[in-house]
Length: 576
Image (tube, rainbow, N blue to C red; front, top):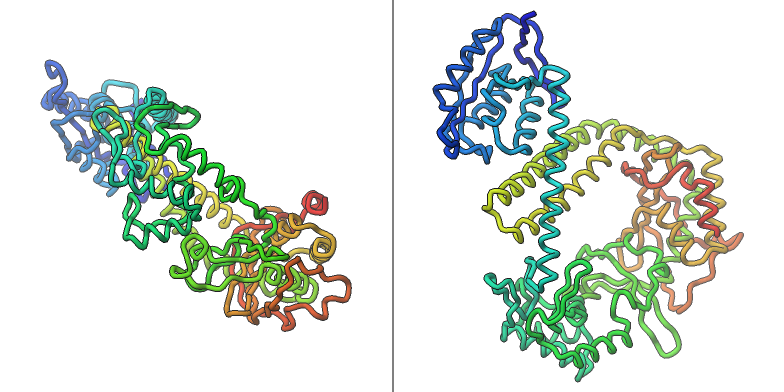
């Protein structure tokens, strides 16, 4: 029975190309003569003659547009192929017809990409000489199978590139990427060669650290005062000095993943000097892995930002004659110096105490604000739905573009026009971006599906009891876990003023939480006590820092707390 097709009407992103009965089916014929085809068996004229005969054999089919390229099929950047895709997107054709599939592209990945683009535009793809018709279930199944093989091919190429870099590393060759300070790259030999100007600075750094016993920040200040700059032209920091002191590349070694090769290039530092630096690093505990301050001691790590420069506040220590003092310090000030940011340090004991007692007060005495917050969050969720939908569309478009960029780089690598080292560097950046986009896609999808709901009174009573128990008897790790579960951030609004922003648990698992920002500031007591203050007990509520009832605005937040804020399993784990 003759097959007929339908003109494409309005298309959507998830629409499949199908053929339905209609008066006229507009066909776009695509012709390509490859410059590398031996004896040129598929001339433009021969293809066009056969395609027009095929169209004449189909009821109600007419040739609406003609597209022809005289170019290789190794790339999709062909003038008339792009015109054909534009015509498909603009609804000017219903079918794109080729003589053979390889006239469209010789690359499996490119073929899958083009077929998916046609399918999204609602345009059927058909080959005149092969059983390839995306209007049929079998054709669509074949398309899905081709996509699977294309992904397999892509992954195999990436694995091959990584394996090549591992083989190169095993031979002691430079694998690519940013060169280390003190060396240049011999691109012909793939070896590192000493840059004597920079190597003198490397030796100066090790000499000042080992012989003069200067700290990493002091060394960075010395270099910056002399006008010396890093590889990328930026200022030196204690962190950069620390990484350099711990980098075995200056001993003539190269490491890639778990492969380490010695004597791959000339060393800048002697083994004796390097070992002496490691000994001092261990003694001073400057390495991150040997840092003395336990991050669990600082409850609000990652929840406060410097009011002057906007960077995160981190936990630091200062040792006095009789006590060790704990502070929250601006990351910029700690990494560089007070000239970069002169924000004062905060007494960590006083801040932790103030925030914990304010948290207990809020959940115990101001539950009516939770109801207001949830109501406002529900209204905001409905109002923001359109914005989230638009953002999701943008994210999905960027994901498609990122996938296409990866395919272009892989195609260039296969054609021999892109170096392996450049490919590896660009693939790493694109795959990182791809991961971030997919994460945001999942977040938006969940936000669209979930609406904030008021937690049950029994749930709130459980949370209040849990908060009071942890404050009264919990250790540092459990108190920090409590803050991570119920506090979104703490804003610093003045020299002695804090504004905690609380999380409100949803009524069901995987529900959105609401966010309440207190309208009144929380007083931060000026404490000079070196030890953590005693946790409030029983009637201590009368002296809580939050003496003014919190009130304020609500902002929608992604899911931050599970069922009832704290499920029974979580309660047991927090209480030990």
